[in-house]
Structures are given as structure tokens and as C-alpha cells.
Length: 403
Image (cartoon, rainbow, N blue to C red):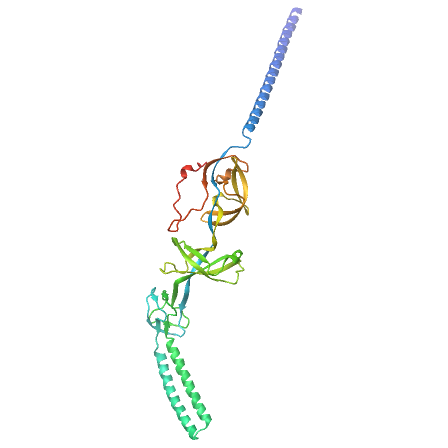
């Protein structure tokens, strides 16, 4: 019995010793792995930090941006004011009868040119002719009575009052004849000036009332151009100035004109000056009502620093450009003047000879390193003999690739 109990105790001791050894070994193995992992993590963190520091040291200014640029230069630029307006007839009228009547004849073809005084429309004159004949007969009788009264008054057979009454009756008959003749003349509608006749709205046999529209007449050589400019240009406009008119309906053609009048009243609604000019239209290619683009030349040409409009970077009410200085973009505020043909005048902010970015500004910040794809010279293209700018050269091969 004692041997059995001793054997059991021995087995339990061996088992406890084996379990304790296994647990102690596991603790040592786990600690080593944790230390190794911690060391590795620390090394990895340190390596990453070192790499980041190295990267920052290598590219502290950021990546280089590919841009297009031009060299700013001066070029002659006419001082002008641009505006939009409408063409108007030099003279325009809608013919209407002053008396009622029936149309008896039409003396024109629609759209033809007519001379001043030409009879355009006749109304039936039968009643008016009869009134004229009646007035003439009454006038003859009144004149005879007056002559007889004068003779009788000289002989003393009638009083002076009777002679005065006969004279008054004569004057009344004369006025009646003039009135009937005037009514007869109103039965003919004549052209008040030379011009092109429009489209009629009546036919032979129509009965027209006083003031009814019948046909329009337009004088279109020369034409008037009405346009508006802001009131800030009041001191720069005057009668006699030259201007150029171009029309979307007739591309490629320009017409010269002269300012003929300036409205002394400034439009309070738009704070604008209303200007009227005259443009020759010998070939009648221009028509009233057409939309016109006007360029009013206020001064002679002068040299100005010009840039393409795409070089500007607007921000609020201010304008900026990016100059390239020592391979880096420098954001600079500029003050602009007039714009013409895709060019803008720079009044203040940059100097001739500086390199200005024209494409790629969206990727730039102040101090960003840049690489120039193309550098062109900014200038207004000279005009050829026919007044149009020469064809642009194809420089697409030198442009920056699209990102």
C-alpha cells in the first residue's frame, strides 16, 4: 500500500516538474520574440523616418511643372473703345393716308428704289374733284358779286358795309377752293425722300382710314449706327472721330464711319453715353436693324506692353500673372488696360523682356519650380496689305503635352 502511494506521488512530481519546465520555456521564447519584434518595428520606423527625411531633403520645393511661356515685349496698339450697336436707316418713314378713301392705284414695286416726289399710292379722287369744281363755281359767283358791289358803291347806290360783305364772301369762297384742292392733293401719297420702298400692306380696292399703315420707305445710304459706351469715356469721345464697324452677318469685312452726334443726356439706367455715327453703304449690303460691333478710335497708336489674354490669372477683381525667375514661378499682380484681338495691355506690374507663363498656371504656386516647354515673343501681328493679320504658324509640335 505504501509503495502504491509513493508511486503516485512520484508520478505527480514528475508531471508537475515537466509542466513547470514547459511553461518557463514558453515565457522565455515569447519574450524573445516580443523583443525581436519590437526591435524590428523600431528599426522599420526609424528606416521610414529616415527615408522621409531623405525625401524631404531631396525634393523640398516640390516637383517641377512643365509650362509654356512667352517673353513680354512692346508693340503698337491703337487706343480704341469697343462697343456693340445697331444699324438704323438714315431716314425711315411708314406712309399713312391723312384722309380716308379707297385705293385706286399703286405706283411702285415692292423693294425698288424710288425718287423723292414719286406718287406711290392714289386714293379714289372722284368726290374731291367734285368739291373742287363746286368751290370754283362759288368763287366765280362771289368774285362777280364783289366787282358789282364795288361799282355800285362808287356810284353811291350801296353802302360801304354791303361792299365789305361782298368782299368777305369772295375771301370765303377762295378759302373753300383752297380747302377742296388740298383735300384732292391728299388723295396722292408721294415719297417724302429718295430710298428703298418696303412691303405694302394694302391692295387696289382696299378702303383705308386716316393713319392706317400702308408701306414703309427707307433711306439706307448712308446708314446710322447707334451704340453706347460707359460714361468714364466721356472725355475721350467727340464728334468727327473715326470708327470701324464689323458685322457678324458679313464676316471679314469692315466699314469706316464717323461720329455724327453725341447725346448730351447720359443714360441714368446704364450710366452710358449714346453715340450716333454714319457709315457709307454704297453697295446697300448693310441693312437697318443689323447687329454691329463698333471700334471707336480715340487716339493714335502708341507702344504698349501686351500679353495674350490667357496669361492672366483672375482672382476676384484683381489680375495676376506668373513670371519665371531663376527657374521658379513668381505670382505677380498686374494692372491691365484695353483688350484687342486676344491681346491685353499691361499697364503696371511687369517689364519688357520678362518670361511670362501662358499655359499651365493651374498647377503653379508661388515658388514652384518650372520647366519651359516653349518660349515665344509676345507681339501684335502686323497687318498685311489687305488689312487682315497673316496666318498663324503651326507650333503645336513645341507645345507642352497634355497631362
